[in-house]
Length: 270
Image (cartoon, rainbow, N blue to C red; front, side, top):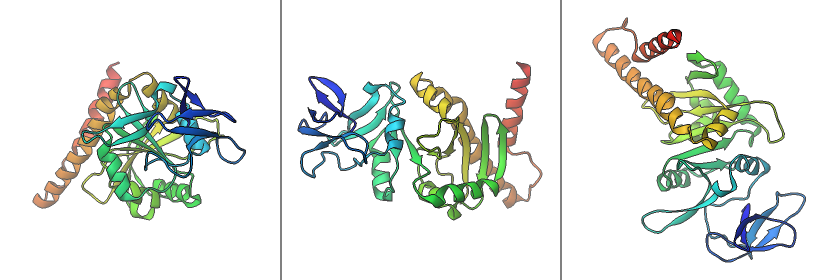
C-alpha cells in the first residue's frame, strides 16, 4: 500500500513509521528499502484485500498523477464485499493499474465489482509484448487518422499476446508502453470493448491528455463525444457489412465512413 492512516491522515511510508490500514484498521509497518518502492504492509503475510499486489515504480508513478484523496479508495458492493481501488476520480471513474498477469476469472470479477472501471495495463512487463504490438499495428488497417487520434483495425489480434489476453474485456482498457523513467510525451493505446468479430479495434490516445481529462473531470465528455459514437458506428458497420454480403450489396458506403465524412464537414465549418 502507498498510504496508511497516521494521526488521522493518509500518509506515505517512511522508515520506522507505523500506521493503520484504511480498509481493515489493523496496524501497518513501513517497508522502506532499496529494492522495492516504499510501501506499507500488514504484519505477517496477511493482506485485507485479496486483489492487492506489490506495486512497481510504474504503478506508483501512475498513482502519483492524481490527487492523494483519489488514491487507494475503499469500495463496497451491495453484498458488503470491499476492495481498494487504485484511483477513484471525482467523476466516479475507477482506474486500476495492472502490471502483473491477471487471471481471466479475477479480471472478470473486478469488471463486475467496479462501476466505470478503466484498466491501464503495463505493456513493458514482458519483453515480447511491445514487439508483438508494434507488429500488429504495422499489419493493421487504418480506419481513421485524425491527429492526435489514430484508429486501427487489428486483423490478427491472436498473434499479439497482450491483445489476446484483453480482447474479450467489456470495459475500457488502455495499454501503456512508456517506461517509468522516460519523460517524453507518449501515446497510450485504447482497446475498444469487445465487438462481435475476431478483430480488435485500437486507438492511439495521448498519455498526458488522459491524465488531464481525469484531473479536470472531463473524461465523461471524451466517452460521450468520441469513444461511444465510434464504438456504436463500428458495431453498426459490421452489421451492415454482414447484411450486404447476405444480400449481395457491396457498393454502399459504411455507416462509419459516413460518420467520418460528416465529422470532417463539421470541422471545416469552424
